[in-house]
Length: 247
Image 1 (cartoon, one colour):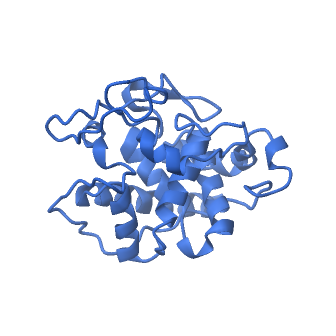
Image 2 (cartoon, rainbow, N blue to C red):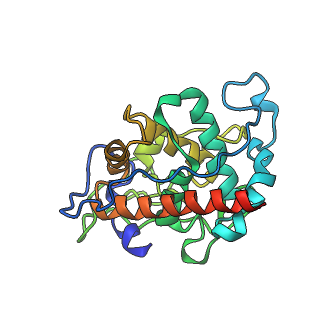
């Protein structure tokens, strides 16, 4: 994961991409994960704002998978809820929670990078920050764009939170995924929903191999990165289906 954090400059930044000669070797799209049960409210529901962390509605579903997949319960709830939300608002995208989990695994070990713990509200403690994007070897130069408000650095930008958004990208794609009144990149509920909308904005169908690859390359333009996400997503999808089939 550290190697990925050193390459933070391409995360969710359509303007500057890491070029890589290594392209994904796998040609199949990731195996979709065991589908979370339908829940309400979801974004757009009239009573959404009055609901306390709607992701908790998926506690039973996530609880059957969390330990075996080594994904914190709150993270799995966040990924599953984001799938359901995008299924309603962007059904042609074909986003599965397992793809978001693949990204979360590579970016921060689902909010556990550097010894952090993901709490029951899907926030890592301590907060996760990337390296300064100061133009040093392997890192893009991105001078401060937010006055240090999100990343605590008023000189250079840093990637923020369990899905490693840079401040300028969060400004465009940030979402309040848990109805607490704030779009917070340190909150995996918010970050998972934002990442889903970013991936689906490409107009691609993530169930198709090449379109999946192209969408994840927008997230980080590295073939090695795409392969890592694909491997995790396919593994989570396969194992989750097997686990729930045995129960």
